[in-house]
Picture 1: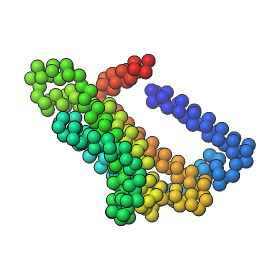
Picture 2 (picture 1 turned 45 degrees about the vertical axis):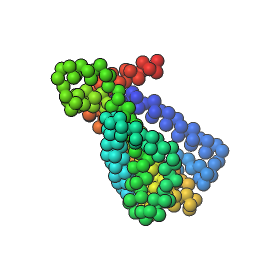
Picture 3 (picture 1 turned 180 degrees about the horizontal axis):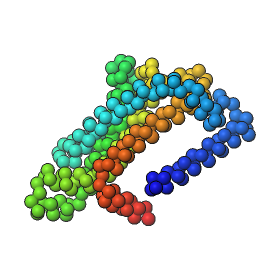
Picture 4 (picture 1 turned 30 degrees about the vertical axis):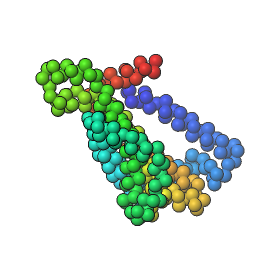
Length: 261
């Protein structure tokens, strides 16, 4: 019920947007080459579903693998920065500088360095999704109040017990916030990567459709990419609900509401 109540406004807004879009295309007689009506996009998605699905699986596998690499490296790097002041002071400025650089511009260079295939795509996806995981890991692990750490120490808890019983549960909501941001970034990364170094995937298909003037089918590719992004985001959110204790999640939500108020 809670999920349906939260999702209902978004569903209603999307439906209203589609109705206005459909009406505007019909009233102003906009050509499909410029802006196809939603009904035409849906018809094309259904009629060409085998083609879309054929290119969906490579894109999904690239998203998952690149995201997994970013998750592993980003979490490890965040842990190092959070627990070692010396290494953190050495690594963090370089990470900020790397984030400022436009990583999309490295896409053609990755093709030069690693050739066509899976490797340059995975590297680009991991680069784009890496930074939000690092930052949120560091912020999450530093959220624990020092008084609570002192209390655990006074009760005889060691560093490992303090981490798993106090710091980790407290950090999970913010940590998963970074994972959800990275999930959306990974979809952006795979599209850019497939533009430059692929002969399959939804990004490649989208580029091919645009170059052929098939705007309606190109919108279909965009919708499929959006669905993939929502699916990955939903899986991460579902894992969050399984791993984050309900009382911590509620306390975090209540704190966010108070700040907004």
